[in-house]
Amino acid sequence: MLIVMHHWATDKDVTLVKKTITSMGLKPVAIPGAERTAIGIIGNQGRVNDAPLRDIKAILEIIPVTKPYKLVSRDFHPADTVVTLGNKVKVGGKSPFLVIAGPCAVESRDQMMKTARLLKKMGVPVLRGGAYKPRTSPHSFQGLREGGLELLDEVRKETGLLVVTEVVSPEHVGIVAEHVDILQVGARNMQNFDLLTEVGKIRKPVILKRGLSGTLEEWLGSAEYILLGGNPNVVLCERGIRTFETATRNTADLAIIPLVKEKTHLPIIFDPSHATGKRNLVAPLSLASIVVGAHGVMIEVHPEPERALSDGQQSLHFPEFEKLQGRLNSLGKFVKQKMQGQGTRA
Image (tube, rainbow, N blue to C red):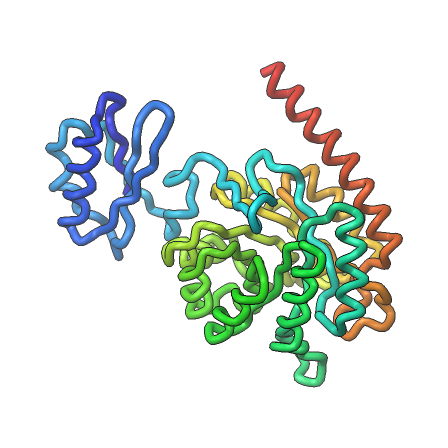
């Protein structure tokens, strides 16, 4: 439920509404606006009896919110959320297009340092690398685990890059958060609700990937778990979904990006590597994601993809990534200029 206050409502009026909502056993969430304040209600398991609120004169309108997610909805938070990564890198809203890059899995210090030095030279601020690797086959490389976290920590301290890695278990949240700047919840864990609850207790940014067969509503419901725990720093990541098509690893659902931006204020980035599973498709899909409104991309890059222990077939060689980065910069500037021009004419 959403309570919209009159434009003349005072702080005292808002406090009265909050106290009334609390007395109903529910939680008020204030949503300040340019012209008037709104107050969201969360904690209800069904329809809210609004009788205690009806006689408060400072209330302009009481709007039922039927969505299963509230805190991530634009109904509760109309303005775009901008998530700060580290101390200065921002994603969302009108922030510059974000590029995150690195190998699928942390394999060695040499591999990670080579990649980190390339990214730093190119001005790419965030390095990705999996320490824990949930794999379909138990015979596949499962990651260096704690050893991988230590390497990531070493690399970020030496280069100054921000680091993101996947957390796969609620028990690992604490140790992973100690070693990296951004936590990732992978596709297979999108509905691991115990894990979502744990990452909701920390304040570090969380990249939440869409599940292999996750619907938009399910995905945003998973994000709601994290925000409800008190962590507002969530970045959504579209990484392709499972369909009947076998020509690509997954089916890249680019249409979900503008749809997500209609439904939620959270930033959304795109993972073309997992969405396609093919090195030659990473560049065109990355560029396409800019056009449909993504706030950034997460790309797999490896010093020697042919020798990679995980997902080498979808990882870019260094020269390929450098070329793509230049094209991303050029297209990003072009799209931004066009959007600004349209806004001016409007």
